[in-house]
Image 1: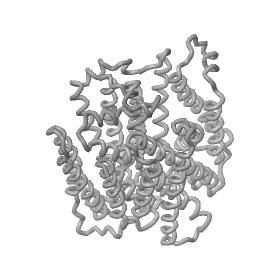
Image 2 (image 1 turned 45 degrees about the vertical axis):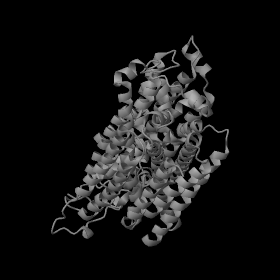
Image 3 (image 1 turned 135 degrees about the horizontal axis):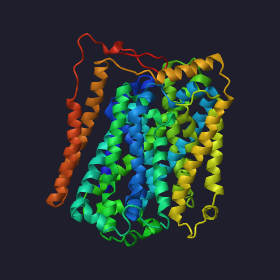
Image 4 (image 1 turned 90 degrees about the vertical axis):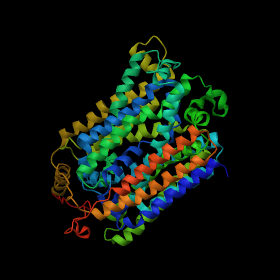
Length: 599
Protein backbone atom coordinates (compact mmCIF):
# COMPACT_ATOMS: atom_id res chain seq x y z
CA UNK A 1 0.00 0.00 0.00
CA UNK A 2 1.50 3.35 -1.01
CA UNK A 3 1.56 6.46 1.19
CA UNK A 4 -1.20 8.33 -0.65
CA UNK A 5 -3.66 5.45 -0.30
CA UNK A 6 -2.81 5.13 3.40
CA UNK A 7 -3.53 8.82 3.99
CA UNK A 8 -6.93 8.55 2.28
CA UNK A 9 -7.82 5.45 4.33
CA UNK A 10 -6.89 7.22 7.59
CA UNK A 11 -9.00 10.19 6.50
CA UNK A 12 -11.96 7.91 5.78
CA UNK A 13 -11.61 6.35 9.22
CA UNK A 14 -11.72 9.83 10.74
CA UNK A 15 -15.00 10.61 9.02
CA UNK A 16 -16.56 7.36 10.21
CA UNK A 17 -15.42 8.09 13.77
CA UNK A 18 -17.03 11.56 13.54
CA UNK A 19 -20.35 9.92 12.67
CA UNK A 20 -19.99 7.57 15.61
CA UNK A 21 -18.98 10.37 18.00
CA UNK A 22 -22.09 12.42 17.18
CA UNK A 23 -24.52 9.48 17.18
CA UNK A 24 -25.98 10.29 20.63
CA UNK A 25 -26.91 13.83 19.59
CA UNK A 26 -29.44 12.56 17.02
CA UNK A 27 -32.35 11.50 19.25
CA UNK A 28 -35.27 12.63 17.05
CA UNK A 29 -35.90 13.56 13.42
CA UNK A 30 -35.27 17.24 14.06
CA UNK A 31 -31.83 16.32 15.43
CA UNK A 32 -31.21 13.84 12.65
CA UNK A 33 -32.06 16.15 9.76
CA UNK A 34 -31.06 19.60 11.02
CA UNK A 35 -29.15 19.17 14.27
CA UNK A 36 -32.26 20.08 16.26
CA UNK A 37 -31.76 23.71 15.24
CA UNK A 38 -28.94 23.96 17.81
CA UNK A 39 -25.80 24.12 15.67
CA UNK A 40 -23.29 26.88 16.47
CA UNK A 41 -22.45 29.55 13.89
CA UNK A 42 -18.92 28.40 13.02
CA UNK A 43 -20.20 24.97 12.03
CA UNK A 44 -23.12 26.49 10.11
CA UNK A 45 -20.80 28.80 8.16
CA UNK A 46 -18.28 26.06 7.36
CA UNK A 47 -21.06 23.76 6.17
CA UNK A 48 -22.60 26.45 3.94
CA UNK A 49 -19.15 27.15 2.52
CA UNK A 50 -18.39 23.47 1.86
CA UNK A 51 -21.63 22.91 -0.07
CA UNK A 52 -20.11 25.01 -2.87
CA UNK A 53 -17.20 22.58 -3.15
CA UNK A 54 -16.52 19.42 -5.13
CA UNK A 55 -13.48 17.80 -6.70
CA UNK A 56 -14.23 20.09 -9.68
CA UNK A 57 -12.68 22.94 -7.66
CA UNK A 58 -9.29 21.18 -7.84
CA UNK A 59 -9.70 19.85 -11.38
CA UNK A 60 -12.11 21.65 -13.74
CA UNK A 61 -11.91 25.03 -11.98
CA UNK A 62 -8.14 24.74 -11.53
CA UNK A 63 -7.87 23.88 -15.24
CA UNK A 64 -9.92 26.94 -16.14
CA UNK A 65 -7.55 29.04 -14.01
CA UNK A 66 -4.60 27.49 -15.87
CA UNK A 67 -5.97 28.45 -19.30
CA UNK A 68 -8.01 31.60 -18.61
CA UNK A 69 -6.46 33.16 -15.51
CA UNK A 70 -8.71 35.15 -13.22
CA UNK A 71 -11.97 34.50 -15.12
CA UNK A 72 -12.98 31.38 -13.16
CA UNK A 73 -12.73 33.30 -9.89
CA UNK A 74 -15.84 35.29 -10.86
CA UNK A 75 -17.96 32.21 -10.13
CA UNK A 76 -16.66 32.03 -6.58
CA UNK A 77 -16.83 35.79 -6.08
CA UNK A 78 -20.50 35.47 -7.07
CA UNK A 79 -20.90 32.91 -4.28
CA UNK A 80 -19.18 35.32 -1.90
CA UNK A 81 -21.62 38.10 -2.79
CA UNK A 82 -24.47 35.63 -2.40
CA UNK A 83 -23.28 34.75 1.11
CA UNK A 84 -23.03 38.46 1.89
CA UNK A 85 -26.72 38.83 1.01
CA UNK A 86 -27.32 35.81 3.25
CA UNK A 87 -25.66 37.80 6.03
CA UNK A 88 -27.54 41.02 5.34
CA UNK A 89 -31.03 39.57 4.96
CA UNK A 90 -31.71 35.94 4.09
CA UNK A 91 -29.82 33.75 6.59
CA UNK A 92 -31.71 34.81 9.75
CA UNK A 93 -35.02 34.67 7.90
CA UNK A 94 -34.25 31.17 6.64
CA UNK A 95 -33.73 30.09 10.25
CA UNK A 96 -36.89 31.94 11.29
CA UNK A 97 -38.98 29.79 8.93
CA UNK A 98 -38.94 27.29 11.86
CA UNK A 99 -39.10 24.16 9.74
CA UNK A 100 -37.15 20.89 9.67
CA UNK A 101 -36.84 20.65 5.85
CA UNK A 102 -36.85 23.32 3.15
CA UNK A 103 -39.85 21.73 1.45
CA UNK A 104 -41.91 22.25 4.62
CA UNK A 105 -41.37 25.98 4.08
CA UNK A 106 -42.61 25.63 0.50
CA UNK A 107 -45.70 23.82 1.82
CA UNK A 108 -46.47 26.75 4.12
CA UNK A 109 -45.94 29.24 1.30
CA UNK A 110 -47.48 27.40 -1.67
CA UNK A 111 -49.55 24.47 -0.35
CA UNK A 112 -49.46 20.66 -0.30
CA UNK A 113 -49.42 20.08 -4.08
CA UNK A 114 -46.32 22.20 -4.50
CA UNK A 115 -44.77 20.43 -1.53
CA UNK A 116 -44.93 17.10 -3.36
CA UNK A 117 -43.88 18.50 -6.75
CA UNK A 118 -40.83 20.30 -5.41
CA UNK A 119 -39.97 17.46 -3.02
CA UNK A 120 -39.68 14.87 -5.78
CA UNK A 121 -38.05 17.16 -8.34
CA UNK A 122 -35.53 18.36 -5.76
CA UNK A 123 -34.73 14.80 -4.64
CA UNK A 124 -34.24 13.78 -8.26
CA UNK A 125 -31.90 16.64 -9.18
CA UNK A 126 -29.93 16.24 -5.95
CA UNK A 127 -29.46 12.52 -6.60
CA UNK A 128 -28.25 13.22 -10.14
CA UNK A 129 -25.82 15.89 -8.93
CA UNK A 130 -24.45 13.64 -6.17
CA UNK A 131 -24.02 10.72 -8.59
CA UNK A 132 -22.24 12.92 -11.14
CA UNK A 133 -19.96 14.40 -8.44
CA UNK A 134 -19.05 10.94 -7.14
CA UNK A 135 -18.34 9.60 -10.62
CA UNK A 136 -16.34 12.70 -11.49
CA UNK A 137 -14.14 12.13 -8.45
CA UNK A 138 -13.59 8.51 -9.52
CA UNK A 139 -12.59 9.58 -13.05
CA UNK A 140 -9.91 12.05 -11.96
CA UNK A 141 -8.47 9.82 -9.21
CA UNK A 142 -8.32 6.80 -11.52
CA UNK A 143 -6.74 8.77 -14.36
CA UNK A 144 -4.04 10.50 -12.35
CA UNK A 145 -3.49 8.23 -9.34
CA UNK A 146 -4.46 4.92 -10.94
CA UNK A 147 -7.19 4.29 -8.35
CA UNK A 148 -9.80 1.77 -9.47
CA UNK A 149 -12.93 3.72 -10.42
CA UNK A 150 -15.53 1.29 -9.11
CA UNK A 151 -13.64 0.80 -5.85
CA UNK A 152 -13.37 4.58 -5.41
CA UNK A 153 -17.10 5.07 -5.99
CA UNK A 154 -18.16 2.29 -3.63
CA UNK A 155 -15.64 3.13 -0.88
CA UNK A 156 -16.38 6.87 -0.92
CA UNK A 157 -20.13 6.31 -1.03
CA UNK A 158 -20.04 3.83 1.85
CA UNK A 159 -17.99 6.15 4.06
CA UNK A 160 -20.46 9.00 3.51
CA UNK A 161 -23.35 6.60 4.07
CA UNK A 162 -22.00 5.18 7.33
CA UNK A 163 -21.22 8.65 8.67
CA UNK A 164 -24.67 10.02 7.74
CA UNK A 165 -26.61 7.03 9.07
CA UNK A 166 -24.89 7.01 12.45
CA UNK A 167 -24.68 10.73 13.17
CA UNK A 168 -27.24 12.35 10.87
CA UNK A 169 -26.99 16.09 10.28
CA UNK A 170 -24.70 16.48 13.28
CA UNK A 171 -22.07 14.24 11.69
CA UNK A 172 -22.52 15.81 8.25
CA UNK A 173 -22.05 19.36 9.57
CA UNK A 174 -19.17 18.40 11.87
CA UNK A 175 -17.37 16.64 9.02
CA UNK A 176 -17.89 19.71 6.82
CA UNK A 177 -16.10 21.82 9.41
CA UNK A 178 -13.16 19.42 9.70
CA UNK A 179 -12.94 19.10 5.92
CA UNK A 180 -12.91 22.89 5.60
CA UNK A 181 -9.97 23.12 8.03
CA UNK A 182 -8.00 20.44 6.15
CA UNK A 183 -8.67 22.03 2.76
CA UNK A 184 -7.68 25.50 3.97
CA UNK A 185 -4.45 24.16 5.50
CA UNK A 186 -3.45 22.31 2.32
CA UNK A 187 -4.38 25.09 -0.11
CA UNK A 188 -2.73 27.85 1.95
CA UNK A 189 0.48 25.81 2.06
CA UNK A 190 0.35 25.25 -1.72
CA UNK A 191 -0.35 28.95 -2.39
CA UNK A 192 2.57 30.00 -0.18
CA UNK A 193 4.97 27.65 -1.97
CA UNK A 194 3.67 28.85 -5.36
CA UNK A 195 4.28 32.50 -4.46
CA UNK A 196 7.74 31.66 -3.14
CA UNK A 197 8.67 29.72 -6.27
CA UNK A 198 7.45 32.56 -8.50
CA UNK A 199 9.14 35.28 -6.46
CA UNK A 200 5.87 37.01 -5.64
CA UNK A 201 2.38 37.55 -7.06
CA UNK A 202 3.30 40.03 -9.80
CA UNK A 203 5.68 37.67 -11.66
CA UNK A 204 2.77 35.21 -11.94
CA UNK A 205 0.52 37.88 -13.44
CA UNK A 206 3.22 39.36 -15.68
CA UNK A 207 4.32 35.99 -17.09
CA UNK A 208 0.84 34.58 -17.64
CA UNK A 209 0.69 33.40 -21.28
CA UNK A 210 -2.66 35.06 -22.06
CA UNK A 211 -4.68 37.99 -20.75
CA UNK A 212 -4.73 37.28 -17.01
CA UNK A 213 -8.20 38.74 -16.41
CA UNK A 214 -10.25 37.50 -19.36
CA UNK A 215 -8.24 34.55 -20.71
CA UNK A 216 -8.33 33.09 -24.22
CA UNK A 217 -10.76 32.48 -27.12
CA UNK A 218 -12.44 35.87 -26.96
CA UNK A 219 -13.29 37.87 -30.06
CA UNK A 220 -15.80 40.04 -28.22
CA UNK A 221 -14.81 41.34 -24.77
CA UNK A 222 -18.38 42.53 -24.25
CA UNK A 223 -19.47 38.88 -24.00
CA UNK A 224 -17.01 38.37 -21.15
CA UNK A 225 -18.34 41.40 -19.26
CA UNK A 226 -21.94 40.25 -19.72
CA UNK A 227 -20.99 36.73 -18.60
CA UNK A 228 -19.23 38.00 -15.45
CA UNK A 229 -22.25 40.12 -14.47
CA UNK A 230 -24.61 37.22 -15.22
CA UNK A 231 -22.55 34.84 -13.09
CA UNK A 232 -22.78 37.27 -10.18
CA UNK A 233 -26.57 37.43 -10.47
CA UNK A 234 -26.91 33.68 -10.96
CA UNK A 235 -24.81 32.74 -7.93
CA UNK A 236 -26.58 35.34 -5.78
CA UNK A 237 -29.92 33.82 -6.75
CA UNK A 238 -28.76 30.25 -6.18
CA UNK A 239 -27.52 31.00 -2.65
CA UNK A 240 -30.53 33.07 -1.58
CA UNK A 241 -33.64 30.95 -2.05
CA UNK A 242 -35.67 28.62 0.12
CA UNK A 243 -34.34 25.42 -1.48
CA UNK A 244 -30.77 26.39 -0.60
CA UNK A 245 -31.65 27.43 2.96
CA UNK A 246 -31.23 23.97 4.53
CA UNK A 247 -27.83 24.82 6.03
CA UNK A 248 -29.30 27.73 7.98
CA UNK A 249 -32.18 25.64 9.34
CA UNK A 250 -29.60 24.00 11.60
CA UNK A 251 -28.46 27.23 13.27
CA UNK A 252 -29.07 27.78 16.97
CA UNK A 253 -30.97 31.02 16.36
CA UNK A 254 -31.21 33.98 13.98
CA UNK A 255 -27.92 35.52 15.08
CA UNK A 256 -26.00 32.26 14.70
CA UNK A 257 -27.42 31.93 11.18
CA UNK A 258 -26.31 35.47 10.33
CA UNK A 259 -22.80 34.97 11.74
CA UNK A 260 -22.50 31.64 9.90
CA UNK A 261 -23.33 33.40 6.63
CA UNK A 262 -20.66 36.02 7.32
CA UNK A 263 -18.07 33.29 7.93
CA UNK A 264 -19.02 31.59 4.65
CA UNK A 265 -18.73 34.97 2.88
CA UNK A 266 -15.23 35.60 4.28
CA UNK A 267 -14.04 32.09 3.41
CA UNK A 268 -15.45 32.30 -0.12
CA UNK A 269 -13.85 35.74 -0.63
CA UNK A 270 -10.39 34.55 0.41
CA UNK A 271 -10.75 31.12 -1.18
CA UNK A 272 -10.30 31.92 -4.91
CA UNK A 273 -7.18 33.96 -4.20
CA UNK A 274 -5.64 30.99 -2.39
CA UNK A 275 -6.95 28.05 -4.48
CA UNK A 276 -5.85 29.15 -7.93
CA UNK A 277 -2.34 30.49 -7.28
CA UNK A 278 -0.76 27.07 -8.03
CA UNK A 279 -2.60 26.85 -11.38
CA UNK A 280 -1.67 30.41 -12.32
CA UNK A 281 1.95 29.69 -11.38
CA UNK A 282 2.00 26.52 -13.52
CA UNK A 283 0.74 28.49 -16.53
CA UNK A 284 3.13 31.40 -15.99
CA UNK A 285 6.13 29.07 -15.57
CA UNK A 286 5.38 27.32 -18.88
CA UNK A 287 4.92 23.79 -17.54
CA UNK A 288 3.65 21.57 -20.39
CA UNK A 289 0.77 19.67 -18.81
CA UNK A 290 -0.24 18.11 -22.13
CA UNK A 291 3.11 16.29 -22.24
CA UNK A 292 2.92 15.32 -18.56
CA UNK A 293 -0.59 13.88 -18.77
CA UNK A 294 -1.21 12.67 -22.36
CA UNK A 295 -3.87 10.27 -21.03
CA UNK A 296 -6.11 13.28 -20.25
CA UNK A 297 -6.15 14.39 -23.89
CA UNK A 298 -7.76 17.80 -24.35
CA UNK A 299 -8.51 17.98 -20.62
CA UNK A 300 -4.83 18.10 -19.62
CA UNK A 301 -5.36 21.47 -17.91
CA UNK A 302 -7.46 19.74 -15.23
CA UNK A 303 -4.23 18.28 -13.81
CA UNK A 304 -2.73 21.73 -13.13
CA UNK A 305 -3.18 21.69 -9.36
CA UNK A 306 -2.16 18.06 -8.98
CA UNK A 307 0.93 18.56 -11.13
CA UNK A 308 1.97 21.52 -8.97
CA UNK A 309 1.74 19.43 -5.80
CA UNK A 310 3.61 16.58 -7.44
CA UNK A 311 6.47 18.81 -8.66
CA UNK A 312 6.84 21.47 -5.97
CA UNK A 313 5.37 20.14 -2.72
CA UNK A 314 7.07 17.70 -0.30
CA UNK A 315 6.46 13.94 -0.41
CA UNK A 316 3.17 13.07 1.27
CA UNK A 317 1.40 16.31 0.39
CA UNK A 318 -0.16 14.67 -2.67
CA UNK A 319 -1.94 12.30 -0.27
CA UNK A 320 -3.36 15.22 1.70
CA UNK A 321 -4.51 16.82 -1.57
CA UNK A 322 -6.27 13.60 -2.58
CA UNK A 323 -7.93 13.59 0.85
CA UNK A 324 -8.94 17.21 0.27
CA UNK A 325 -10.43 16.28 -3.11
CA UNK A 326 -12.38 13.45 -1.51
CA UNK A 327 -13.47 15.84 1.25
CA UNK A 328 -14.66 18.45 -1.25
CA UNK A 329 -16.79 15.91 -3.11
CA UNK A 330 -18.07 14.18 0.02
CA UNK A 331 -19.29 17.49 1.46
CA UNK A 332 -21.73 17.84 -1.45
CA UNK A 333 -22.71 14.16 -1.42
CA UNK A 334 -23.46 13.94 2.31
CA UNK A 335 -25.49 17.15 2.12
CA UNK A 336 -27.65 15.70 -0.65
CA UNK A 337 -27.96 12.39 1.17
CA UNK A 338 -29.12 13.84 4.49
CA UNK A 339 -31.35 16.47 2.87
CA UNK A 340 -33.03 13.96 0.54
CA UNK A 341 -33.73 11.54 3.37
CA UNK A 342 -35.21 14.40 5.39
CA UNK A 343 -37.49 15.52 2.56
CA UNK A 344 -38.63 11.95 1.87
CA UNK A 345 -39.45 11.25 5.52
CA UNK A 346 -40.85 14.62 6.65
CA UNK A 347 -42.65 15.60 3.44
CA UNK A 348 -43.85 12.26 2.13
CA UNK A 349 -43.78 9.42 4.65
CA UNK A 350 -45.01 11.34 7.70
CA UNK A 351 -47.78 13.47 6.13
CA UNK A 352 -49.05 10.97 3.54
CA UNK A 353 -48.02 7.37 4.27
CA UNK A 354 -48.03 7.28 8.09
CA UNK A 355 -49.40 10.49 9.64
CA UNK A 356 -49.72 8.89 13.09
CA UNK A 357 -46.29 7.26 13.19
CA UNK A 358 -44.37 7.57 16.46
CA UNK A 359 -41.12 9.51 16.64
CA UNK A 360 -39.19 6.34 17.50
CA UNK A 361 -40.43 4.54 14.39
CA UNK A 362 -39.89 7.68 12.30
CA UNK A 363 -36.23 7.68 13.35
CA UNK A 364 -35.94 4.08 12.14
CA UNK A 365 -37.55 5.04 8.82
CA UNK A 366 -35.13 7.99 8.59
CA UNK A 367 -32.10 5.73 8.88
CA UNK A 368 -33.55 3.28 6.36
CA UNK A 369 -34.24 6.18 3.96
CA UNK A 370 -30.66 7.40 4.38
CA UNK A 371 -29.34 3.93 3.51
CA UNK A 372 -31.66 3.75 0.50
CA UNK A 373 -30.61 7.14 -0.87
CA UNK A 374 -26.95 6.37 -0.25
CA UNK A 375 -27.33 3.13 -2.18
CA UNK A 376 -29.06 4.99 -5.01
CA UNK A 377 -26.23 7.53 -5.23
CA UNK A 378 -23.60 4.78 -5.38
CA UNK A 379 -25.62 2.84 -7.95
CA UNK A 380 -26.17 5.95 -10.07
CA UNK A 381 -22.45 6.79 -10.01
CA UNK A 382 -21.61 3.23 -11.10
CA UNK A 383 -24.21 3.48 -13.87
CA UNK A 384 -22.75 6.78 -15.09
CA UNK A 385 -19.34 5.15 -15.02
CA UNK A 386 -20.61 2.52 -17.46
CA UNK A 387 -21.73 5.20 -19.93
CA UNK A 388 -18.31 5.99 -21.34
CA UNK A 389 -19.66 8.32 -23.99
CA UNK A 390 -21.48 10.58 -21.52
CA UNK A 391 -19.94 13.99 -20.86
CA UNK A 392 -20.26 14.54 -17.11
CA UNK A 393 -19.73 18.27 -17.39
CA UNK A 394 -22.41 18.60 -20.05
CA UNK A 395 -24.76 16.38 -18.04
CA UNK A 396 -24.36 18.49 -14.91
CA UNK A 397 -24.86 21.74 -16.82
CA UNK A 398 -27.91 20.34 -18.59
CA UNK A 399 -29.59 19.12 -15.39
CA UNK A 400 -28.78 22.35 -13.58
CA UNK A 401 -30.12 24.48 -16.42
CA UNK A 402 -33.23 22.42 -17.13
CA UNK A 403 -34.44 21.87 -13.56
CA UNK A 404 -32.19 23.79 -11.15
CA UNK A 405 -32.86 27.43 -11.98
CA UNK A 406 -36.62 26.95 -12.59
CA UNK A 407 -36.90 25.52 -9.05
CA UNK A 408 -35.02 28.46 -7.62
CA UNK A 409 -37.12 31.32 -8.98
CA UNK A 410 -40.45 30.62 -7.23
CA UNK A 411 -38.64 29.79 -3.99
CA UNK A 412 -36.83 33.14 -4.25
CA UNK A 413 -39.65 35.37 -5.46
CA UNK A 414 -42.10 33.74 -3.04
CA UNK A 415 -40.17 35.48 -0.27
CA UNK A 416 -41.21 38.90 -1.58
CA UNK A 417 -44.31 38.51 -3.77
CA UNK A 418 -47.09 37.45 -1.44
CA UNK A 419 -50.41 37.64 -3.28
CA UNK A 420 -50.04 34.76 -5.71
CA UNK A 421 -52.30 31.74 -6.28
CA UNK A 422 -50.81 28.42 -5.12
CA UNK A 423 -50.48 27.18 -8.70
CA UNK A 424 -48.02 30.00 -9.38
CA UNK A 425 -45.12 27.92 -8.02
CA UNK A 426 -45.53 24.76 -10.09
CA UNK A 427 -46.63 26.70 -13.18
CA UNK A 428 -43.53 28.91 -12.92
CA UNK A 429 -41.38 25.80 -12.63
CA UNK A 430 -42.90 24.39 -15.84
CA UNK A 431 -42.43 27.68 -17.69
CA UNK A 432 -38.82 27.82 -16.49
CA UNK A 433 -38.17 24.23 -17.61
CA UNK A 434 -39.48 25.09 -21.08
CA UNK A 435 -37.30 28.20 -21.24
CA UNK A 436 -34.27 26.16 -20.19
CA UNK A 437 -35.02 23.48 -22.80
CA UNK A 438 -35.27 26.02 -25.62
CA UNK A 439 -31.96 27.64 -24.65
CA UNK A 440 -30.11 24.37 -24.04
CA UNK A 441 -31.39 22.41 -27.05
CA UNK A 442 -33.01 24.66 -29.65
CA UNK A 443 -30.86 27.80 -29.56
CA UNK A 444 -27.74 27.61 -31.77
CA UNK A 445 -24.75 29.98 -32.23
CA UNK A 446 -25.89 30.86 -35.75
CA UNK A 447 -29.16 32.24 -34.38
CA UNK A 448 -27.34 34.67 -32.07
CA UNK A 449 -24.75 35.62 -34.68
CA UNK A 450 -27.49 36.49 -37.15
CA UNK A 451 -29.61 38.33 -34.58
CA UNK A 452 -26.72 40.48 -33.33
CA UNK A 453 -25.10 40.88 -36.74
CA UNK A 454 -21.74 39.54 -35.55
CA UNK A 455 -18.98 39.54 -38.16
CA UNK A 456 -16.72 37.00 -36.40
CA UNK A 457 -17.86 33.48 -35.63
CA UNK A 458 -18.39 32.84 -31.92
CA UNK A 459 -15.71 30.70 -30.28
CA UNK A 460 -16.68 27.71 -28.17
CA UNK A 461 -15.95 29.63 -24.99
CA UNK A 462 -17.91 32.70 -26.14
CA UNK A 463 -20.92 30.55 -26.96
CA UNK A 464 -20.76 28.78 -23.59
CA UNK A 465 -20.51 32.12 -21.76
CA UNK A 466 -23.29 33.62 -23.87
CA UNK A 467 -25.64 30.72 -23.13
CA UNK A 468 -25.24 31.41 -19.39
CA UNK A 469 -26.13 35.08 -19.93
CA UNK A 470 -29.05 34.38 -22.28
CA UNK A 471 -30.39 31.77 -19.87
CA UNK A 472 -30.27 34.13 -16.90
CA UNK A 473 -31.84 37.05 -18.74
CA UNK A 474 -34.56 34.79 -20.18
CA UNK A 475 -35.40 33.36 -16.78
CA UNK A 476 -35.52 36.79 -15.14
CA UNK A 477 -37.75 38.23 -17.87
CA UNK A 478 -39.92 35.25 -18.86
CA UNK A 479 -39.92 32.88 -15.86
CA UNK A 480 -39.73 35.55 -13.18
CA UNK A 481 -42.14 37.75 -15.11
CA UNK A 482 -44.63 34.89 -15.33
CA UNK A 483 -44.53 34.41 -11.55
CA UNK A 484 -45.17 38.11 -10.95
CA UNK A 485 -48.02 38.15 -13.50
CA UNK A 486 -49.83 35.39 -11.58
CA UNK A 487 -50.70 38.08 -9.03
CA UNK A 488 -53.31 39.24 -11.56
CA UNK A 489 -55.13 35.93 -10.96
CA UNK A 490 -54.98 36.12 -7.18
CA UNK A 491 -58.46 36.03 -5.69
CA UNK A 492 -57.60 35.05 -2.16
CA UNK A 493 -56.92 31.58 -0.74
CA UNK A 494 -59.01 29.13 1.29
CA UNK A 495 -59.02 29.93 5.01
CA UNK A 496 -56.53 27.23 6.04
CA UNK A 497 -54.16 28.17 3.24
CA UNK A 498 -54.43 31.83 4.16
CA UNK A 499 -53.46 30.92 7.72
CA UNK A 500 -50.45 28.97 6.49
CA UNK A 501 -49.22 31.82 4.29
CA UNK A 502 -49.75 34.28 7.13
CA UNK A 503 -47.77 31.97 9.41
CA UNK A 504 -44.94 31.75 6.88
CA UNK A 505 -44.53 35.52 6.61
CA UNK A 506 -44.99 36.04 10.35
CA UNK A 507 -42.31 33.44 11.03
CA UNK A 508 -39.69 34.88 8.68
CA UNK A 509 -40.18 38.35 10.13
CA UNK A 510 -40.04 37.23 13.77
CA UNK A 511 -36.48 36.85 15.12
CA UNK A 512 -35.63 33.61 16.87
CA UNK A 513 -33.52 34.35 19.94
CA UNK A 514 -32.32 31.63 22.29
CA UNK A 515 -31.70 32.59 25.90
CA UNK A 516 -28.13 33.42 26.77
CA UNK A 517 -26.75 30.33 28.45
CA UNK A 518 -29.35 28.00 26.94
CA UNK A 519 -28.15 24.61 25.76
CA UNK A 520 -24.67 25.25 27.20
CA UNK A 521 -24.13 21.53 27.68
CA UNK A 522 -24.97 20.84 24.03
CA UNK A 523 -22.83 23.75 22.84
CA UNK A 524 -19.89 22.43 24.82
CA UNK A 525 -20.35 18.93 23.43
CA UNK A 526 -20.09 20.33 19.92
CA UNK A 527 -16.85 22.12 20.79
CA UNK A 528 -15.31 19.23 22.73
CA UNK A 529 -16.18 16.41 20.33
CA UNK A 530 -15.10 18.24 17.20
CA UNK A 531 -12.17 19.99 18.90
CA UNK A 532 -10.68 16.66 19.97
CA UNK A 533 -11.05 15.13 16.52
CA UNK A 534 -9.48 18.13 14.78
CA UNK A 535 -6.62 18.30 17.30
CA UNK A 536 -5.85 14.61 16.70
CA UNK A 537 -5.92 15.23 12.94
CA UNK A 538 -3.45 18.08 13.44
CA UNK A 539 -1.10 15.81 15.39
CA UNK A 540 -1.21 13.22 12.61
CA UNK A 541 -0.40 15.86 10.00
CA UNK A 542 2.53 17.09 12.11
CA UNK A 543 3.71 13.46 12.37
CA UNK A 544 4.23 13.54 8.60
CA UNK A 545 7.36 15.55 9.38
CA UNK A 546 9.00 12.13 9.74
CA UNK A 547 8.70 11.54 5.97
CA UNK A 548 11.98 11.85 4.02
CA UNK A 549 11.82 15.48 2.90
CA UNK A 550 14.19 18.46 3.00
CA UNK A 551 13.88 20.75 6.00
CA UNK A 552 11.48 23.15 4.29
CA UNK A 553 9.21 20.22 3.39
CA UNK A 554 9.13 19.02 6.98
CA UNK A 555 8.32 22.57 8.09
CA UNK A 556 5.35 22.63 5.68
CA UNK A 557 3.81 19.64 7.47
CA UNK A 558 4.64 21.17 10.85
CA UNK A 559 2.89 24.43 9.96
CA UNK A 560 -0.14 22.70 8.38
CA UNK A 561 -0.50 20.35 11.33
CA UNK A 562 -0.04 23.14 13.83
CA UNK A 563 -2.76 25.17 12.09
CA UNK A 564 -5.21 22.26 12.25
CA UNK A 565 -4.25 21.45 15.85
CA UNK A 566 -4.63 25.09 16.92
CA UNK A 567 -8.20 25.20 15.59
CA UNK A 568 -9.05 22.01 17.47
CA UNK A 569 -7.42 23.27 20.66
CA UNK A 570 -9.31 26.59 20.49
CA UNK A 571 -12.62 24.76 20.10
CA UNK A 572 -11.81 22.43 22.97
CA UNK A 573 -10.78 25.37 25.16
CA UNK A 574 -13.80 27.54 24.35
CA UNK A 575 -16.26 25.69 26.57
CA UNK A 576 -18.72 27.79 28.53
CA UNK A 577 -19.95 27.52 32.10
CA UNK A 578 -23.66 26.74 32.45
CA UNK A 579 -25.77 29.11 34.53
CA UNK A 580 -26.46 27.65 38.01
CA UNK A 581 -30.23 28.06 37.72
CA UNK A 582 -30.46 26.93 34.13
CA UNK A 583 -31.44 23.41 33.12
CA UNK A 584 -30.70 22.55 29.52
CA UNK A 585 -33.09 19.64 29.57
CA UNK A 586 -36.04 21.93 30.20
CA UNK A 587 -35.35 24.24 27.26
CA UNK A 588 -38.13 24.50 24.73
CA UNK A 589 -37.24 22.67 21.53
CA UNK A 590 -37.71 24.53 18.27
CA UNK A 591 -39.21 21.65 16.31
CA UNK A 592 -40.42 23.65 13.37
CA UNK A 593 -44.04 23.37 14.40
CA UNK A 594 -44.64 26.62 16.24
CA UNK A 595 -43.61 30.23 16.53
CA UNK A 596 -41.91 30.06 19.90
CA UNK A 597 -39.58 32.98 20.43
CA UNK A 598 -37.14 33.22 23.29
CA UNK A 599 -35.79 36.50 24.46
